[in-house]
Image 1 (cartoon, rainbow over the protein chains, first blue to last red):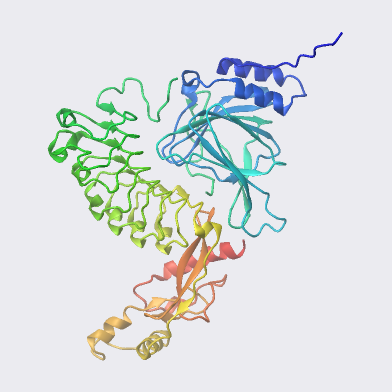
Image 2 (cartoon, one colour; image 1 turned 45 degrees about the vertical axis):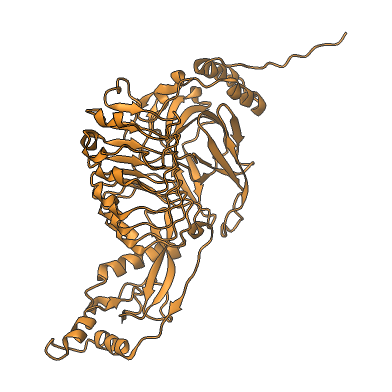
Length: 204
Length: 315
């Protein structure tokens, strides 16, 4: 008789449930990218659940910490005003999942600059991510720039970083030169945390 | 599904009218009767034709009360003159419309702090924009702008300037004086994707050569020694920013694109004027033009530029 092998497919019905499942998953040492991506996509964005983390800044996108994952991961919500975009950046050897909660974000992938770090950087591809879609990237895939290209709508995204990191490199598109930046939170657990750097570290 | 618009606050119903995404081709005259309207959101409609805004807007109560106006995602081909009567307006958005220009009369909106014009077809910026004394956030991204007028450097309150996805190949060096600037977006401009080196040089006239000699050799003269026009001419000497040169120029100069560090994180291509093609970029040695008689370019500016060049050269 055939043995039916059932793979566990997680479904998060709420943001709280998503966080709980993440904690459970990461109490294990072995987690697959596919598992996490499917979990992130399974959560249907409901603004009422994440509204308190969605704190916007007039001048640039914000990072709002949701959960510290017992040190194993960071879950945060990024808020993008109209036209706000990031620099080209890497992910400091971590896994990065990005799920759209509201609006759209354009992701442009770049190759790593050449060894000498001179000369314009090469664009690999670009795509527009829609609500509830989830993208994945790590340093072996490449670098990316994320932008809200809309002039009429804001965007909100949910980011999962495994393990957490608080600095990364930003890259000058013209020369490939990199510059280390420290990443800060605009708010943590729904509370505004001022004293974060007033001046943006990013070149875009 | 609940949307979460930016700036949403509980109980902000008073003085806020949101008619976004309702297919409106015109805002009706009922608008003129609203006594205390502070925020009008009318994005993503079909506004832009004649009569899109009601007549008498400038005399209505809302001309004094309105602080925020969002008309993004409509069909305006030019900034409606009726808006210029909204003297209390602090925030104006006309993103994603069909604007081809910005009228110089925009300077009438003297309370403006936030101006969003991204996603239009704007080709140039009127210098009058610099007359908005409180402007702190200016968005001109996704347009067809080829150059920034140096007068924009007068926007001392500017904290964020969004210029990404335009046709800029360089920026005026005056932009370095925007010391409060926290954000500057330049991606998707030729100056970032590739850069243009432009070297043009009109050989100096005899007048210029004589003037240069007077200045660099410190030939003494009193205003009674020379005709008035020559005294005036001599006062217009500009310092060559190359500190190894220490020379001056009048009208004949080399226009060069140099990359200058800004805010410690951008390499901006700026226009530099050098007195001859033999002059090279300022290098690490200290400025020697301490005996300059120049009154137009300050010596401090030359030293600052040299210091910044040092950062670029060291990579």
